[in-house]
Image (cartoon, rainbow, N blue to C red; front, side):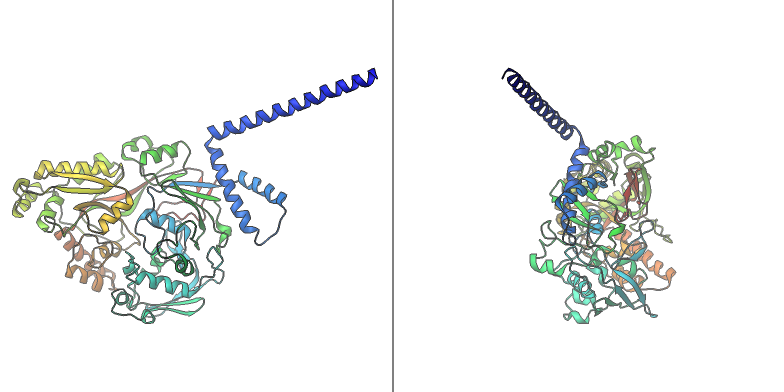
Length: 580
């Protein structure tokens, strides 16, 4: 009995020692996990990737049945080899509808969620096969025939056919849709007339679904850059079955949207982030290397740069003026020529800006050289015309120059000598620490030279766009980035019926030069002469004030591969990957 009792006593002691050891180990593990969650931003990223991995596994489970143990093991392995690309997009998008969007931030999102008949080559942005695997052009240059892939599908598995594109383009032409880029489709036979209500039968528009996978497009005259346009978001397909179900204003919301590009929308937290993951139904899925893309909407470029330098972003598209000296010599800083013009719009429907003399007076007093030398400081060039010099073959020489005395004379002739009696006006700009110092410098210059007292006002991106498009402003900051490498991508914007004109300005001779002569002239030299003459009219009447030609300044982690500099600052993420 004594020996048995001793054995029991020893057993009980050993049991308690084992329990204590297990509990102690559990406490340490829990503390370690909590510490990592609190202090490591990388842990936060992995948790998000786990969500992505679960989503991918769920999608794959429709095709293949696997045990839970195997799936869990695969998910953990995937999370350790994740490849997340984080980018600051600069603002909250106004929409994700490719047919109605107008801004660069929105276009960046659309170019990764959707794909047109063609898509951009990452190095030079030349059109390469997208949904269309091939195409041909008739000898007279009027008829394009596109042959679509039979494995192109929406992310919900619905096939994409020639009728998908026909319906989508007609939707954008419909004035009810209010697409600001509808005129990009007006090169198509009867497309302009359809938008204007002069043709009501959609079958008369030169867009025909010959069969499920053959699309025929008839132009009203040869257009050399039409194939380039098919890369542009206005030409992207729209999921009719989703629009019909949820409506024009809700189909692209997180809970509803389907897309056909290399990525799909997985999360949209307003004013915080947009997340994308690879599209499992994408026809070229094997080329997509990134496991997740995160777009942040930070409008403060200082915040964005700080995040990048802290390793919280792989790329930023803008660099704050004040910090250029800090980073300009780094290997990960890029400064490239850019197909864009920074300018101010006049609301020409509001006095006194309905008077060209007033507009010219303000334009002639801006010290552009000082702005690019002391404020932007990034290699920008003073602009005295709208079409930038980065377009090959563009040689227009503007007669606009800084001339204070002439500006004072014009203002006096308009009835405001030394600024006397000039109404209180406001200069509007979208929230950005780069726009503010420029606006302050220009307004101060107008006050000192012309005696005009003007206030400045900033608005968040979506509000700013609405004010400009509704002509609810006096003067507004603007920037225009070429949609293709041709003067028409700038000049066309200022024609009377263009949805992006947003100045109220109209000139019949200008419209004729752009829409009837320059746009369709096949002789290159003659064509450019028409555009140069139109540019002279624009400079003479000055509905806009060109300020400088852009350069693109961006930071890119040296670990990121597959992104290249180009004059349009477009960077498809389809084949991008991150080393290590």
